[in-house]
Image (cartoon, rainbow, N blue to C red; front, side, top):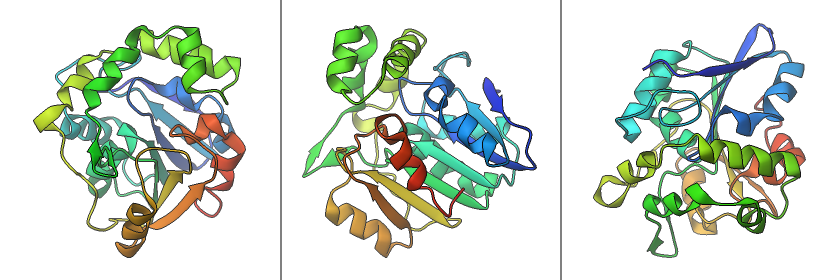
Amino acid sequence: MQLYTREWGTGPRTAVLVHGIMSDHRTWHRVGPALAERGYRVLAVDLRGHGRSPRGPYGAELFADDLVETLPAFPEVVIGHSLGGLALSLAVERLQPRRAVYSDPAWSLGRGGQPLDPAVFVTFKTANRAMVRSFNPRWDDADVDTELATLADWDTATAHAMSAERFQDRTPEKPVVPSLVQIAGEGFLFSAEGAAELAGRGFEVRTVAGAGHTIHRDDFDGFMAGLEGWV
């Protein structure tokens, strides 16, 4: 499946951005131009079932296959947030980037032994401005507007397809290419023990203190600082 792709910049190096569930390329509205200013040609896709890309069927491997079909091989750097991090980790061996960044990747939705079923995200489909603001108090008006727009263009079947017995722990045993895992200091996916385990598997691990799950929207400056040496 060919995915809708938004592009910034015309630099000689390619950077790829892959969003999380419920979102689309618009979540990168600050990151894309910032990387373009650093000399990248930046490609941000809409995963199937999100934004302007085609709909269904859905599954982690299908999300990954679409990235391989849509994106050029051998990019300089790939950055995936949440579901995008999961999809990239399943595609990275085929894409063969020079570096990979996984921003609070949704490899295993559990913390302290309490697993989170992806189907819970369906309840956000009808979120209003007040609800989005209450869950994301650090966002500015532009990001709240973006969230409402991307929710409207999101197919909730993507969450059901990752739900219940279909969801697996997909934490990579080791990085395929040099890889950074960027952890949200106020997120719900990684404990200190989990971060240490990733480091033991060969990932570089950096935490953005005070940021929630969507690091690049909660703390853009912290997100970019956390990429130092990787972009």
